[in-house]
Length: 443
Image (cartoon, rainbow, N blue to C red; front, side, top):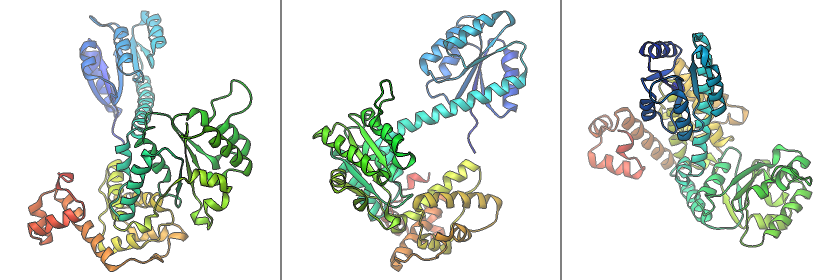
């Protein structure tokens, strides 16, 4: 369940700001009031999680001056102006400056609620977009999204850090749903090109002519900048590279050869063919393949990641539980074994779906994780993978999950965890160190 957006109400008249506050609070908004524009500027800054509703005529700094100051602080902050009957021309000027909208006194409260809903929705989208842009430029944040401590994930993170510093083109391979696009973002963010453009094109989403124009540009003047030019100096990611026709493969090879070395634009190609029994090498012309595969990353399937499956499921369950305002499901020993042994043909994307449905199911107080795994499509029906795992892997994965769940339940209280699990302090400390668990994460 999303948190309520804030509304800062600015009006020098106490009765007016209180009545607006009460009405909007009844409509589900989190309101705060300010008696002057000067006070509002102290409480409303960049990335303010909401909108501003302000009277135009106030002593000292008026609403127009406040609007200009707020635009300077955060140009995407919606400001709704309240004006008297004779001040409509001023309100129109406010709209020209950048106000979201205005209300003329006396106004219909329902009209204010409608405007507030539209403004907060616009604000939420702007903040989400801003957060995404920041995240995609933050290598540390992106690496943290690659959750897991299994050997294959440790190697993947090392490969990203190593190849991120290199300058050659990269080929990313892996099954569907493993997070190949996230790896491409991380490669860009941890490298020397992080401050440059990151452009992504899905080759499988367009017909040949449209795709050709998107990557290389049409011949006519005034057309949008082609991706290969837009990404100059930065990174161009081509998803589903296997969808390129022979003609487009030839054009791409020519463009790569024309760049020389080091490349002006780094190309990261994402190939998605494993489940089809083909390889990227078999569908691309050899000279193009070897140019793109100068550096290579294979993203591991979820079924090879061992206890990462339980770690991911727990974290996803907590996130969805917070979103839906309910408790995260507790995983039994049997369900933990089933999660570890499931084949996961949809990989992390499938695990996300199962975790969300488990939370919704838990909110209703019915069902089980096992039933979700059995109903998650015909491909997911087998209870065991064909690859198998040593008993030691299951025991360690369950032990880690048990300690993790107990630490969460007791909010990091070591004594309570020791008592419940019948473990001496030293043994608990050793096991937590072994599984990468830190008490500070549970406080």
